[in-house]
Image 1 (tube, each protein chain N blue to C red):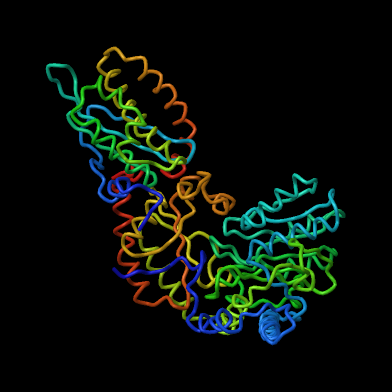
Image 2 (cartoon, rainbow over the protein chains, first blue to last red; image 1 turned 45 degrees about the vertical axis):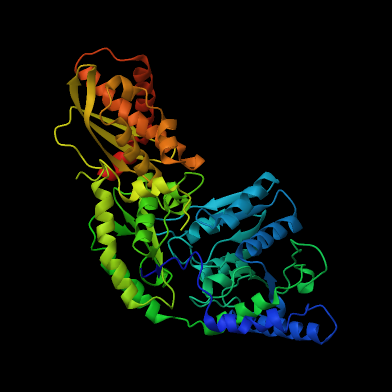
Length: 381
Length: 159
């Protein structure tokens, strides 16, 4: 059976060019970048070359890039270490639809004596700049608002958030794991002080990410040790992974209009199904590769596994798909009812997605939905 | 491919049995989970044989996950042909055992299936003004309380 991968917000396939670029760093150029011999120098050079590439794509300086193990680590370091450097009894602002790596970190800091404000979002999943401005007080040290949401793809007004934070003298961190190289980011122009990104969302390997720290921002390491990454992240660098991350970046195109066109074709086709709607924003306020729907009367886990039987890999915000049995906190924050969040389906494309694949899912999805509605007591059939 | 679910669960999910709305049922039972928002409906047709009333036909409808659908389907299989006295004795762990296993967070789906069955039996006995066994009365009280908690979710989606 044909297998169609439409879960690219979860992770992506490693591009063949990326794998090729990484290979020598496992087999021949396997040196420790801290070593003094040729093996070490070779690794160190590759590391610095990659750092330049990654800095370049967001208009940062190479020394402002810290390589980490991924988005979660970057988020943790940004938030915890800014907080700890200022001490308890300070105030942090975030939003109710952040990734758990941010939300759980903020919850942890709350227990450690910090005050946290979680900004609400409107039904499209956007925060209000007014709310943000009103929430900033003397004790506020950090605002952490994601660039684009992982479930619904809504893009936050990061430029305006950056401007407000800079005016008020508050640091601004953004989790850009989903948006990185999908939409333009300029850390200088957008007044971003800290930014998290991850390699495996853009056809790079898993286990690699970065934290951008604007020069002048004082931050401590989360991981202490041999003082790698200018003392900001100890542990022998994952050279092969970092090289792969940089190679993956060079393969990305912004904007990728082909992906957007296919995504729009998908949305248009799916919305022909009765009693279903698109969750999140429309047009430019949405990531070009994201579509998220709710289907009335049915449950997402059953939907995802039925689609899997048809060869389509998708994802859901249903309570049943989680260990906690709570539906997606993002959809709930946008004002969806429990039942509406229950029937949600996320389809996320990549540059490898084809028109044939989109047409295939448009062919099988109505039948799967119809089938599950037939057995639902809510469907009225 | 290995799922978090047993082979039997996946089999019943893919090919559920007795998964339909019944025309002119003798009784209907409904249960809902405040834990996850799942809702289940069981339909019964009751017949008479020497040893008493029995379940002549049974079907279900489910708004819920894979575990929910397969638990309902397994309950249908277990309860069909049983006398009401026997059907009342079906426990949720009987369903789990028949399914092979259920992930611990999904055990409540099997509880829901048994609850919906008992509700249908309760409604039948009540309608016929027959005596209602203690265990059925007890589960009825609990189920009604839980249904109230999921009611607002339903109202919103049915609008």
